[in-house]
Length: 247
Image (tube, rainbow, N blue to C red; front, side):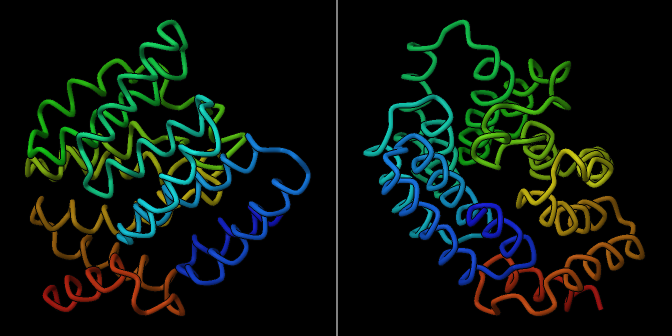
Protein backbone atom coordinates (compact mmCIF):
# COMPACT_ATOMS: atom_id res chain seq x y z
CA UNK A 1 0.00 0.00 0.00
CA UNK A 2 2.85 2.41 0.75
CA UNK A 3 4.32 1.76 -2.70
CA UNK A 4 0.97 2.46 -4.36
CA UNK A 5 0.55 5.64 -2.34
CA UNK A 6 4.01 6.73 -3.47
CA UNK A 7 3.03 6.42 -7.13
CA UNK A 8 -0.20 8.33 -6.53
CA UNK A 9 1.71 11.16 -4.86
CA UNK A 10 4.28 11.24 -7.65
CA UNK A 11 1.57 11.31 -10.31
CA UNK A 12 0.62 14.76 -9.02
CA UNK A 13 4.23 15.88 -8.70
CA UNK A 14 4.59 15.37 -4.94
CA UNK A 15 8.06 13.89 -5.18
CA UNK A 16 9.17 14.46 -1.60
CA UNK A 17 6.09 12.67 -0.27
CA UNK A 18 6.57 9.90 -2.84
CA UNK A 19 10.17 9.35 -1.76
CA UNK A 20 9.16 9.01 1.87
CA UNK A 21 6.45 6.48 1.05
CA UNK A 22 8.74 4.50 -1.25
CA UNK A 23 11.37 4.33 1.46
CA UNK A 24 8.75 3.04 3.88
CA UNK A 25 7.68 0.38 1.38
CA UNK A 26 11.29 -0.64 0.81
CA UNK A 27 12.01 -0.99 4.53
CA UNK A 28 8.80 -2.91 5.17
CA UNK A 29 9.60 -5.38 2.40
CA UNK A 30 13.15 -5.87 3.65
CA UNK A 31 12.00 -6.39 7.24
CA UNK A 32 9.59 -9.04 5.99
CA UNK A 33 12.40 -10.78 4.11
CA UNK A 34 10.81 -9.95 0.75
CA UNK A 35 13.96 -8.86 -1.02
CA UNK A 36 12.64 -9.16 -4.56
CA UNK A 37 9.65 -7.00 -3.69
CA UNK A 38 11.97 -4.48 -2.06
CA UNK A 39 14.00 -4.35 -5.25
CA UNK A 40 10.86 -3.78 -7.31
CA UNK A 41 9.77 -0.88 -5.12
CA UNK A 42 13.23 0.65 -5.44
CA UNK A 43 13.24 0.09 -9.20
CA UNK A 44 9.92 1.86 -9.57
CA UNK A 45 11.22 4.78 -7.54
CA UNK A 46 14.35 4.94 -9.70
CA UNK A 47 12.35 5.02 -12.94
CA UNK A 48 10.09 7.68 -11.51
CA UNK A 49 12.98 9.93 -10.51
CA UNK A 50 14.58 9.49 -13.92
CA UNK A 51 11.41 10.32 -15.82
CA UNK A 52 10.97 13.49 -13.77
CA UNK A 53 14.54 14.61 -14.41
CA UNK A 54 16.19 13.82 -11.08
CA UNK A 55 19.14 11.98 -12.59
CA UNK A 56 21.35 11.68 -9.50
CA UNK A 57 18.54 10.29 -7.35
CA UNK A 58 17.55 7.90 -10.14
CA UNK A 59 21.09 6.57 -10.53
CA UNK A 60 21.52 6.12 -6.79
CA UNK A 61 18.30 4.11 -6.48
CA UNK A 62 19.08 2.08 -9.59
CA UNK A 63 22.51 1.05 -8.32
CA UNK A 64 20.89 -0.01 -5.05
CA UNK A 65 18.47 -2.19 -7.05
CA UNK A 66 21.41 -3.93 -8.74
CA UNK A 67 22.74 -4.85 -5.31
CA UNK A 68 19.36 -6.05 -4.04
CA UNK A 69 18.26 -8.42 -6.78
CA UNK A 70 19.26 -10.09 -10.06
CA UNK A 71 15.55 -10.50 -10.90
CA UNK A 72 14.21 -9.73 -14.34
CA UNK A 73 11.77 -6.92 -13.48
CA UNK A 74 14.04 -5.23 -10.96
CA UNK A 75 16.99 -5.28 -13.34
CA UNK A 76 14.81 -3.93 -16.13
CA UNK A 77 13.76 -1.00 -13.96
CA UNK A 78 17.35 -0.33 -13.00
CA UNK A 79 18.52 -0.46 -16.63
CA UNK A 80 15.79 1.92 -17.75
CA UNK A 81 16.44 4.38 -14.93
CA UNK A 82 20.17 4.32 -15.65
CA UNK A 83 19.54 4.89 -19.37
CA UNK A 84 17.23 7.82 -18.62
CA UNK A 85 19.85 9.20 -16.23
CA UNK A 86 22.32 9.26 -19.12
CA UNK A 87 24.64 6.33 -18.31
CA UNK A 88 24.30 4.67 -21.70
CA UNK A 89 27.13 2.15 -21.39
CA UNK A 90 25.95 0.79 -18.04
CA UNK A 91 22.35 0.52 -19.26
CA UNK A 92 23.56 -1.29 -22.38
CA UNK A 93 25.51 -3.79 -20.29
CA UNK A 94 22.49 -4.59 -18.11
CA UNK A 95 20.23 -4.95 -21.15
CA UNK A 96 22.71 -7.30 -22.82
CA UNK A 97 22.95 -9.39 -19.65
CA UNK A 98 19.17 -9.67 -19.41
CA UNK A 99 18.99 -10.79 -23.02
CA UNK A 100 21.67 -13.41 -22.37
CA UNK A 101 19.95 -14.77 -19.26
CA UNK A 102 16.36 -14.71 -20.54
CA UNK A 103 16.58 -15.14 -24.34
CA UNK A 104 13.02 -16.48 -24.77
CA UNK A 105 11.22 -14.33 -22.22
CA UNK A 106 8.24 -12.58 -23.82
CA UNK A 107 8.18 -9.55 -21.52
CA UNK A 108 11.84 -8.89 -22.18
CA UNK A 109 11.60 -9.40 -25.93
CA UNK A 110 8.45 -7.40 -26.55
CA UNK A 111 8.44 -4.69 -23.87
CA UNK A 112 11.43 -4.34 -21.54
CA UNK A 113 14.39 -4.52 -23.90
CA UNK A 114 12.78 -2.50 -26.71
CA UNK A 115 12.10 0.30 -24.20
CA UNK A 116 15.60 0.25 -22.73
CA UNK A 117 17.28 0.08 -26.11
CA UNK A 118 15.07 2.90 -27.41
CA UNK A 119 16.06 5.07 -24.45
CA UNK A 120 19.72 4.33 -25.17
CA UNK A 121 19.28 5.20 -28.86
CA UNK A 122 17.63 8.48 -27.92
CA UNK A 123 20.59 9.29 -25.66
CA UNK A 124 22.78 8.81 -28.70
CA UNK A 125 20.66 11.09 -30.86
CA UNK A 126 19.32 8.23 -32.98
CA UNK A 127 15.51 8.51 -33.03
CA UNK A 128 15.11 6.34 -36.13
CA UNK A 129 17.13 3.59 -34.45
CA UNK A 130 14.87 3.89 -31.41
CA UNK A 131 11.84 3.38 -33.64
CA UNK A 132 13.43 0.26 -35.10
CA UNK A 133 13.93 -1.22 -31.63
CA UNK A 134 10.30 -0.49 -30.73
CA UNK A 135 8.78 -2.05 -33.84
CA UNK A 136 8.77 -5.52 -32.30
CA UNK A 137 6.60 -4.24 -29.43
CA UNK A 138 3.72 -3.03 -31.59
CA UNK A 139 1.50 -6.15 -31.46
CA UNK A 140 1.89 -6.44 -27.68
CA UNK A 141 2.24 -2.90 -26.35
CA UNK A 142 -1.27 -2.57 -24.90
CA UNK A 143 -0.61 -5.57 -22.67
CA UNK A 144 0.23 -5.28 -18.98
CA UNK A 145 3.79 -6.49 -18.29
CA UNK A 146 4.78 -8.13 -14.98
CA UNK A 147 6.74 -5.04 -13.94
CA UNK A 148 3.49 -3.08 -13.92
CA UNK A 149 1.74 -5.68 -11.76
CA UNK A 150 4.56 -6.25 -9.29
CA UNK A 151 6.45 -2.97 -9.38
CA UNK A 152 3.75 -0.53 -10.58
CA UNK A 153 5.81 0.73 -13.53
CA UNK A 154 6.26 -0.23 -17.18
CA UNK A 155 2.79 -0.27 -18.74
CA UNK A 156 2.69 1.30 -22.24
CA UNK A 157 6.37 2.23 -22.10
CA UNK A 158 7.05 1.21 -25.72
CA UNK A 159 4.33 3.68 -26.75
CA UNK A 160 5.83 6.42 -24.59
CA UNK A 161 9.32 5.96 -26.02
CA UNK A 162 7.98 5.79 -29.55
CA UNK A 163 6.38 9.15 -28.92
CA UNK A 164 9.71 10.42 -27.61
CA UNK A 165 11.46 9.13 -30.72
CA UNK A 166 9.00 10.81 -33.05
CA UNK A 167 9.40 14.00 -31.04
CA UNK A 168 13.18 13.83 -31.29
CA UNK A 169 12.80 13.33 -35.04
CA UNK A 170 10.57 16.44 -35.29
CA UNK A 171 7.57 14.34 -36.35
CA UNK A 172 5.05 16.16 -34.21
CA UNK A 173 1.77 14.69 -35.46
CA UNK A 174 3.05 11.13 -35.11
CA UNK A 175 4.41 11.87 -31.63
CA UNK A 176 1.05 13.33 -30.58
CA UNK A 177 -0.74 10.18 -31.72
CA UNK A 178 1.45 8.04 -29.43
CA UNK A 179 0.94 10.21 -26.37
CA UNK A 180 -2.80 10.29 -27.06
CA UNK A 181 -2.77 6.47 -26.87
CA UNK A 182 -1.45 6.68 -23.33
CA UNK A 183 -4.09 9.19 -22.27
CA UNK A 184 -6.76 6.99 -23.86
CA UNK A 185 -5.87 4.04 -21.58
CA UNK A 186 -5.99 5.33 -17.98
CA UNK A 187 -7.04 1.94 -16.61
CA UNK A 188 -3.78 0.45 -17.90
CA UNK A 189 -1.54 3.34 -16.88
CA UNK A 190 -3.23 3.90 -13.49
CA UNK A 191 -0.66 6.01 -11.55
CA UNK A 192 2.43 5.28 -13.64
CA UNK A 193 4.45 8.51 -14.12
CA UNK A 194 4.06 8.41 -17.89
CA UNK A 195 0.33 9.06 -17.46
CA UNK A 196 1.14 12.51 -16.10
CA UNK A 197 4.05 13.15 -18.44
CA UNK A 198 2.04 12.22 -21.53
CA UNK A 199 0.17 15.51 -21.11
CA UNK A 200 3.39 17.49 -21.21
CA UNK A 201 4.84 15.46 -24.08
CA UNK A 202 1.60 15.93 -26.00
CA UNK A 203 2.03 19.68 -25.64
CA UNK A 204 5.57 19.43 -26.95
CA UNK A 205 4.38 17.32 -29.87
CA UNK A 206 1.76 19.88 -30.82
CA UNK A 207 4.39 22.62 -30.71
CA UNK A 208 6.45 20.66 -33.24
CA UNK A 209 3.32 20.01 -35.31
CA UNK A 210 2.57 23.75 -35.35
CA UNK A 211 -0.78 23.53 -33.51
CA UNK A 212 -0.41 26.29 -30.94
CA UNK A 213 -3.93 26.06 -29.52
CA UNK A 214 -3.69 22.33 -28.79
CA UNK A 215 -0.18 22.78 -27.44
CA UNK A 216 -1.33 25.41 -24.94
CA UNK A 217 -4.25 23.21 -23.89
CA UNK A 218 -1.99 20.22 -23.25
CA UNK A 219 0.48 22.29 -21.26
CA UNK A 220 -2.39 23.68 -19.17
CA UNK A 221 -3.63 20.14 -18.49
CA UNK A 222 -0.21 19.11 -17.20
CA UNK A 223 0.29 22.25 -15.13
CA UNK A 224 -3.19 21.90 -13.64
CA UNK A 225 -2.42 18.30 -12.64
CA UNK A 226 0.84 19.51 -11.08
CA UNK A 227 -0.57 22.76 -9.67
CA UNK A 228 0.78 22.04 -6.15
CA UNK A 229 3.73 19.88 -7.19
CA UNK A 230 7.20 20.24 -5.69
CA UNK A 231 8.37 23.39 -7.51
CA UNK A 232 11.98 22.32 -7.98
CA UNK A 233 11.20 19.15 -9.95
CA UNK A 234 13.21 19.52 -13.19
CA UNK A 235 10.44 18.47 -15.57
CA UNK A 236 8.07 20.98 -13.99
CA UNK A 237 10.62 23.78 -14.26
CA UNK A 238 11.05 22.94 -17.96
CA UNK A 239 7.30 22.82 -18.54
CA UNK A 240 6.70 26.24 -17.02
CA UNK A 241 9.44 27.80 -19.13
CA UNK A 242 8.09 26.19 -22.30
CA UNK A 243 4.52 27.23 -21.54
CA UNK A 244 5.70 30.78 -20.87
CA UNK A 245 7.23 30.90 -24.34
CA UNK A 246 3.94 29.80 -25.88
CA UNK A 247 2.04 32.57 -24.18
